[in-house]
Amino acid sequence: MAHPIGITGYDYVEFYVGSAKMWAYWHAKGMGMNIKAYSGPEYGVKDRVSYLMELNNVKIVVTSAIKPGTADINLFVQQHGDGVKRWSLNVKDVKTAFNNSIKNGAIPVRNYKKLSDDKGYVEEAAIKLYDDTEIVFINRDNYKGIFKPGFGEPRQKIKIDAKPTGLQSIDHIVGNVRINEMNRWADYFNKSLNFETFIEFGAGDISTQYSALLSKVVRSKEGAPIKNPLNEPYEGLKKSQIEEYIEEYFGSGVQHIAITTPNVIETIAAMKANGVEFLQPPDTYYEMLKEKKLDIAEDINELKKHGILCDDSEGTGYLLQLFTKPIGDRPTFFYEIIQRNKGAQGFGQGNFQSLFESIEKDQMLRGNFDKDPEE
Image (cartoon, rainbow, N blue to C red):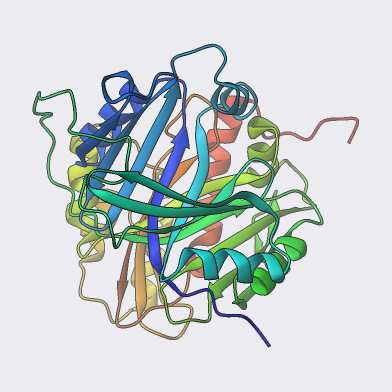
């Protein structure tokens, strides 16, 4: 019998990066997020700086080292580049969540700890995920300050001019893993966190003329809207986007985060105006979309104008989605912007071929599409 974890939702996602100030600016300018809190020497933290960005229910923390001896950050960035170090789950009771996950096979990273200051306390504990990634259990019910101890008011008071994007909440977090790792990590989620596998894409389900992948989606059984797809490379004529990610990231990790919006057309238009680059599907995609005669509220010409993808292949409602280009120097992490309509639960299976063909175009430009002759 599964032990309850008490998950109530996603909390924050933390990136380890080369320059937290630059990443904070990008999220404020490109995604219209607000810099809500800061941690660094001015607040007694001497070896690193962190910025908390918030917009509605989205919380993003970016952290960088300011001392050579900050091994956890420096080693992560040296190997993986800028990327997601940890994502957190808000839970009713951190001790219960941590202990139950460990009993069911989770690998502990940090035992239960209470972080305190004069504004109260935050409870945290962490377990291992793929390679150098972590899942943090957090509860801040007894804290009245900004985010958690060690954080205070932002030092930068300059208003960053950006068009409002209307981003609402984290929809799902996607992991890319090595060959033969997908089932292992899906089992890890299901056993240790009381998740279940509810969508699975096998050989041939997700492919183009040149590349392919396998995928499973796991979700929490406790009612919280937590969904985590896992992707694994599958043999194809050329190098898949998953293979490229693993090579460039030097391991398994978080490939992208999907963020919801109530109006994807307005959000994409605003983000483009703010300077964010997106993948562009071929024009033929919209010709085929019109032929389907879908029952959707949006004008397909408007979707085409902004490059937005539409899918109703899951049989429950329809979703609209679009993916940014990689936001760092390496072709690894990116964001997905998603709007779910009429109870849509899928992940855009009907869009996969057009999406991956767009990614393959960028792979060709980077020279990372052909297989190694020795493989």
